[in-house]
Every structure is written in structure tokens, then in C-alpha cells.
Image 1 (spheres, rainbow, N blue to C red):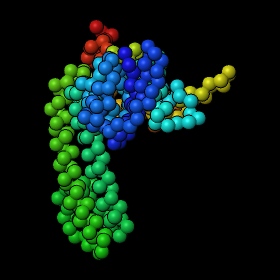
Image 2 (spheres, rainbow, N blue to C red):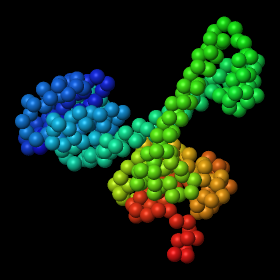
Image 3 (cartoon, helix red, strand yellow):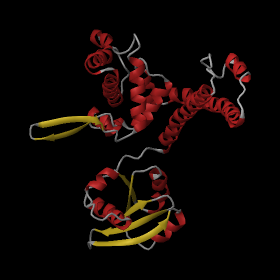
Image 4 (cartoon, rainbow, N blue to C red):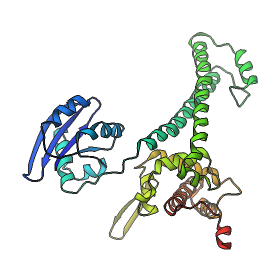
Length: 342
């Protein structure tokens, strides 16, 4: 098996080769991120090939493109790859050959690759979140623009009939008036697209087995259930719920030496979309009467000592523990009282 490392950039990649049988370590130069160019490069190597690339924004597209050209395609953790390299001289050539070398030596392990259906559902939930954020940003821009010129909108919903009628009566001169007209034109369009994605989420969530299981938890609806399910993916790949916490980036950084043991801020290394969904779900649960009592007790225990925000994060961690248990055991949520009676 020949190992080929790819240091992927926007338009091209740097390729490096390592042959475990002979110990040959070779730089293959730059190659465009196109199927034809990749095929020309790899057809020069008749042996079985394993292509190794780091996780990034286009890694799944690259892996799917390269699958017909090699026997194996690995996506590896870039943080693990950086730990193995000496940083005295960092070049694309060194990065590519190091990926091939350390993968062959077993120091790098392939990450789980979501199936195409899961990737598509991720685009749905992430797209819905992005469109909602854009609409909120446009709303804030409108209110800030009005405030800079002495106007305060008395209505909460800027798309309501009363608010629209009030906005019609506002007259701003110069470029401020032009900007207000543009923002008013953008807002209903963004809101309409966000609602279309929300309807698609409500349609897809009941058909997704893992999302239905998470929706059995009080406080988790179609969006949060589907978002957390597709971001977690195959739950059994996490040996423990602590591994899932680490994947979400909700674990605290630790610095320990001899008797000194200090805990810092959250690492935030991992899936930021899962972290967002877990914290949002925890924030909703602490204000519900029907929420899991164990999560609420944990929230108030931390909130009294450290404040509400650290308590929400702790509640989100415990929620991930609960999600991991339900998905691995393949059972729906039961309240502690119902479990005790059973």
C-alpha cells in the first residue's frame, strides 16, 4: 500500500508519497483540485493507494472526488497531524509528505466520514441557522440605522403590518434612506427563505430515526432534534459520552503539572454546530417546567455558584451525555419517575 498525503488549498493541492516497503519519501509537486489532474498524477502509481488529507471545509468533497482513484481515502484530524511535525520549517512539501509518513506508521487514524444523506441534512439545519442569523442581522441593522437618525421603532416585529406602516412614515435623507430601502427589501426575502428551510426541517425530522429519538426529550423539537442527530452522526463511534463532549468542544482546557491543576475556558475544538445546538437546547430546558429534573438541578447547582452562563454549558454537557445514552442504547427518553416505576 502506497500512502499519498495531500495538503489541500483552495485551487490546488501539494502531494507527497511514502512507500512503507522501501522507505521512499517523495514530493509529487502541486496538482489542481480537479478530477482529471488528480487522475493523471495517480495513474503513474500502479500500486494500491491510500490518500490522506486533513479535515477542512472542503474535505468531504475532495474525499468523494478521490474515491474512484484510490483503494482508501482517509480524512485525519489536523490537530493530531500538527503535533507530529517539527515546526522549525513549515512548508506545503513537508506537510504533504508528513501526512503520508505518519499515516503509514499508524500515528494518524482516519476520521468517521458521514454518508451523503447526513451531509445533505447538515446543509439543511446549518442553512436554516445561517438564514435566521442573517435575518436577525438585517433587523438589527434597521434598528441601528433608525436610532442613529433619532427614530425608535415602537413595534417588536418589523415585518408586522403596524411596523411596516410606521416604517413607511419614516423619511431618511441621502444614503441613509437608500440603505433603509435596501434593508427593508432584503428582510422579507430572508425571512421567507428561512421559513422554507424551517418547514423542510419539520418534514425531515419525523422521518429520521435518531432525530425522533432525541425529540422524545422534553424541550427538543424538530430543529434541535435533527440538528443534533446529524451532527453527532453514528453515536457508537464515541466510546463514552466524554468523547462526545470533547467532539462538541464543550470541555474545559486543562493545564496540570505536579500539584498545580488549572482549568481554563472551553476548548471549542470540535463541531461548533453541535455545540450551538446543545447550548440552545439547554437554554430552553432550564425555563421549562416539564424538563428533565436532573438537568434542572444541575443547572441551578452551578448557577448559584458561578452564574447562569457556566450553568448552561454544564447543562449542555449533561444533555449530550443523555443523548449519547439514548442513541447508543437505542431507546426513547423516559422521565426519572417513569423509569423508577418501571
